[in-house]
Length: 481
Image 1: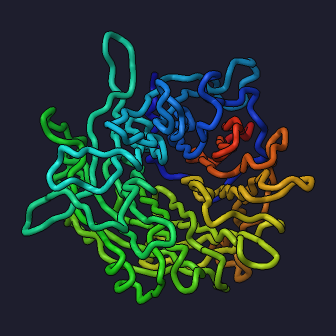
Image 2 (image 1 turned 30 degrees about the vertical axis):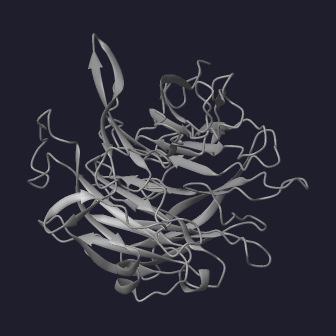
């Protein structure tokens, strides 16, 4: 298997996509005996070329233990535009969680993948390791690297990452109190796979914390392709930002938690944090940037909706392009009347330091999400051409919570001054519904795009407690960009 797509090249300024997304012929589901109540599709992630797709099923029952969870790793079998009717994605590997005593791990709650597909991380938000001292907060993030053995490739577990902190220049395990739980509630992996951000943010509890880890081979920043000694951990703890710091840095206020979603750019130099509960649930996005030649990230900027309103929960989901020039954020919109979600694109020129609003991406009412929206519901392709927003709460044909996905495309034209500068405009391109509408399945709960905006994955995970089957649909745009 080859997963090196060479996506670090310069992307085109404008998208040349000529066709709408077309549904692939093969729908992904969990194993036949496991598919009920597994929340298959609770979280999904895709490599830059769309070849590797990771699907989390955190409530999967394994060996009669409920909520053990698993991740399913698929490999794309045919290229875009191929006419041969082979399955679009084939299961490459299934990895199940490991229960510890009476604690079902809920493995696969969140997943992320490096751009080249060589590294996968997955959280188990209920997993515990009581042998560690001091005992860290519940939740473990598992790191898998692609390797080969006897001529066969597979993803190998290389590390378990725990909540940590630095006390007196010593890294120790972190358990910041009874309000802290679910380490791995959100996570992000940089495009190069060398920086990991993990979040704790229980719903409606005054807490929130971001933990940042970096590949231990990067003690000298980005010098070639480092080779890590086998005995060294993959990731070492660098820094955390707790609720008090996030609010102090930004000047924001809330009685609830902060840090609900997180995204990283190519090298992890830019950390984007969605805070949907701040400012009376108007929501904001916080931007932190690495201090050059250090292992420290500092507050840089607050991003807000151009017309903030209480209850919109802007920042419920965020994403960033690999080069860091565009950030997108989503507003759930479930408590406004009429309920209507939307997205916002922020842009900075490569020579600028600050982001400004480029466009608002309106939905077609009543597209909206819920406060308990499951996962990443906004994604932007790394070339900055395509944005996909999932609205898992949207009704369809009088059926509740069917969900939909709206696709937006960036177009370019010369500005009115005719000075050769390019002006970008965003427009709604396509609206997708589940091929067979299923109430309460929440199509659009999670979305993922490849780097060129030509391959799309959409999850319909069917939340508990109903006996429903989660599915993941894949789409392709039969053209080149």
